[in-house]
Length: 53
Image 1 (spheres, rainbow, N blue to C red):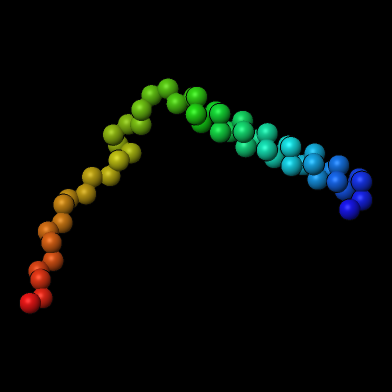
Image 2: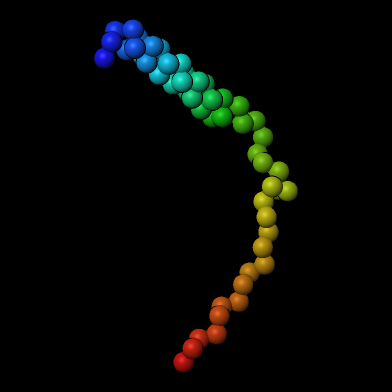
């Protein structure tokens, strides 16, 4: 590999890694309140299927 390509590749990898790390930390530490109950779907319980004897 050429030296300039290696430098660009490392720089791009560091940039992408830092963006992912920042997003991960923001998701971990900025959750201030629990999700509202409207986000959860309530489904009725299903009866078991009849057995084939």
